[in-house]
Amino acid sequence: MAEKPKPPKWVIVFPFIFVIGFMAFMFRKDFPSGVWEAVKLAGLIPLIIVGALLMAVVVIGVVTWIGRVTGKDVLKEAGEDPEIREFKERFHRGARNALDRLRDRVPSEEAADAAPDGPAAASPTPPTLAAASTPPEERFSRLAIASGEMTREQVRTCLEFQAAKREQGSIIPLWDCAVLQNVAGQPVAEQLRRDAGELAADSVGGFGIVRKLGEGGMGAVYLATAPDDTQVAVKLLAAERARRRPLLTRFMREAQSAINLEHENLVRGVAMGEESGRYFYAMEYVAGGSVRDLLTGPGRLDPAAAALACAHESGLVHRDIKPSNILLTKEGVAKLADLGLARHTAEDLTELTRSGAGMGTPVYIAPEQVTDAKHADARSDIYALGATWYHMVVGQPPFPGATAIEICHKHVNEPLTPARTLRPDLPEAVDEIIPRMMAKDPDERIQTATEVSLLIEQNCLA
Image 1 (cartoon, rainbow, N blue to C red):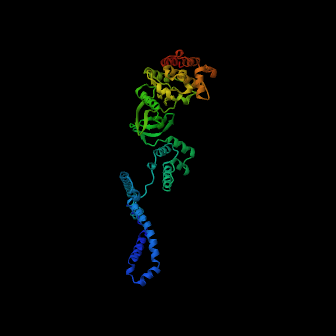
Image 2 (image 1 turned 135 degrees about the vertical axis):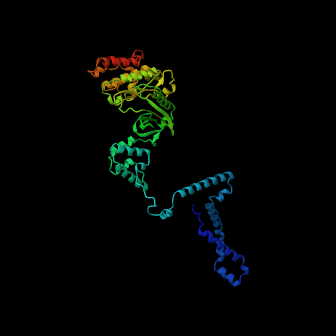
Image 3 (image 1 turned 45 degrees about the horizontal axis):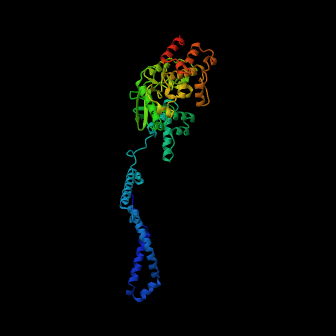
């Protein structure tokens, strides 16, 4: 417990001087005449007058001291409302109790000096991987060791350096410590930091976070380990996005669609939920990349068309077909992902389209999605799949542009440049199917994804 403050010395001295002088003045008649004259000559009478003036100061000082000891402002409380005074007393009493509990937890310097030396004393434990202060730093440590960029001893050196700096009052992230200790190059440390991600948690919904896979407009995706030790991808909705109802609805729609639909060419949903304010869903992890990485490749889209047919047969319209949403396994199997804009054909999209979230990606968007997104249907997905195929075989989007508005205007108004004009070696069948998929009028397009899949299989894979 802290010592109560002591009153100033002058608060104690001046009352004694005043009392002695006052007693001398009151009993002056009892003094022999010679003694009183001596008192007057000694200047006691002026001292009495000065003492009277100082007495007022003393009274104020005593009241102030009482206030410091008791935690009360006596002068103010004289005219203060009793309920307000009682509230203040409870507040100050609670604050003092909290401070006392805090002091009890922190050992005093005297107690530290009195601690026994030798084996009984607690010796400092060398930092280990668990000594990293934040989940991102722990992931950084594990990734640095697993990738071979840093050894376990180098990580331990960085942790010791970080701990020493913390004692000096400096908070330095572990990746910066690695650079300052010259055990990792700055570009390497920065890449490991990005791979570790910013998520301030070791797990979400029972899925252990391993590293960050990427980030998009809706949030971040992390590689994680499921309770059965299988690898999954966990998609986390950004907090600011979760506060916008249309985007939260889109996120939950994507999760629910992925969980409920089953097809070998659809990314399988595993679970969805919320934890500590974070909305998430876990899905099958596809390790081979996406069609976006193969935009100059041979252009096999029949598996994606088959997956799209499965979604359409279940009454879902994807609404955002593009290369990055067609994932590839290590064996080369295409899997359609990101059903975030998918909706049932009978579902009302008024709120989603009003917010702009119902729009697809401009580079691959169908004309009717530009003019009125509510009227998009399965044939809009066929147009986007054709635009994706065009990009893959030609090496550039069907309608390049500097802005989204310019690109959307071209989708609606400009004719498609034949793929063989830009790539003469392209098979004729491909150059015939793509324009049919990308007709401006939905009624003039190939009407089903099943038909697209069959046409590719019969004419392009023979």
